[in-house]
Length: 306
Image (cartoon, rainbow, N blue to C red; front, top):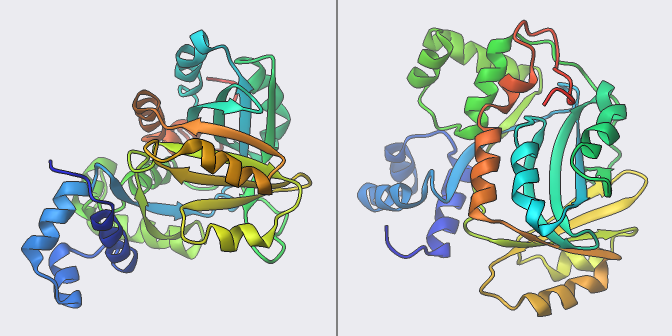
């Protein structure tokens, strides 16, 4: 496949941010690029280190986001992760060590099942902590939640678009047993309801194989300026503070990064993006919506079923 070059991935991310669903020929024509050079870069990275994914407003379909940190013994890490990634409501699981040694989780829960979280996590560990997490915005987010009110076929469609939004319409139609115009109608309906926000290119964890997670009661605006040129995300923990995650490569000096990052947070933890765990996460997420939603489309299954 050749050497992985971050500048080529960044180039592809920039292009697919502007043209997430357009054909390569259209992109090359619009940008005045050599089609065959673009295709070589695309074939080298797309689907391996980068995919275009649908971004959804899960609030409208009644889901709340959470992060959790479970204490798990080293010898039980993989076994516990295998069990956790059988649950489609759990979006990813990774080994993590710091203020809690074991596993870090990101999961989504129907708003009327939040009171079941302790019971769900208690199946895997006696020592855990979790926080609701929301997008970091300047304004206040409404504390209102919808419900799943779509047919089951929409769950399948949402999985396809989440996994690879560049999947051809013809292929989607075959998977759904629908016509191409019907698929386009369904996609437009998701947009009109505000569920489907946009399509974004997502670099894979193979690019960054480490992450530092920090929790802070207050957000120092300096941290956003200081790490402006790095891959860092910020989330709001309602009533608790903020969560920050900094992604980097294991080839870099982790000690200095922890020292630098610890100035801005009260609790810190190092997350490892292991290929084995990635395989488990990918397998779990590929058909997550259609496993979360009841076959009759009447709502969500229980988070305790898995």
